[in-house]
Amino acid sequence: MNALQRREMFVRFRLANPHPTTELEFTTPFELLIAVILSAQATDVSVNKATRKLYPLANTPTAIYALGIDGLIPYIQTIGLFRTKAKNIIETCRLLLTEHSSEVPRTREALQALPGVGRKTANVVLNTAFGEPTMAVDTHIFRVSNRTGLAPGKNVDVVEQKLLKVIPKEFMHDAHHWLILHGRYTCTARNPQCWNCMVIDLCDFKSKTPLPQAT
Image (tube, rainbow, N blue to C red; front, side):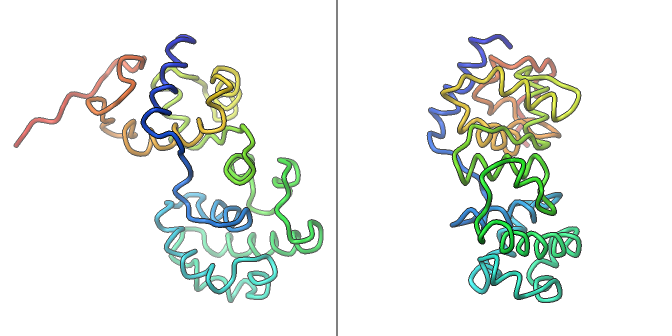
């Protein structure tokens, strides 16, 4: 995929969805941070079901820390790795209270110092909560970047750096969301919906999947 094709790709994404955002439900940076921690190896749907019950009761570092691990688990036990996530969330709340005046930090280094927060999670918070032009490469973005030829790479770090380099600056703020949604609903891992793809003519993927036959 060349530079003109890459730009056209994002022009089409923007026309189809001018204001993309995460499918995680949140109203504050802290709610987003907790939701993203919970979303590791879990679906956004399952996280939203849990936070819809949790946040009306506790949606601040003080309130969630007061629950403790045992008090938090009942709200998140339908999510994978819930015990580890509960431990990380309670410790994250403690650090926010003691080191950040209950505020979510706005630097990658400070975010990644919080338990359960890796580079991808930090990038999601920086981009979605604070408007930073970061690129959080998840399995969807990794797949789309390699399959389409947008930014092929052997691992997520390589793909992230390539995406930051090749995506035109005017699209960087929203590119993360467009690529996730494209991978989640069109460029799926199995049986990608090439017949329903708005960028099929720009894509390097050779094995285009045919239109399903009527039964």
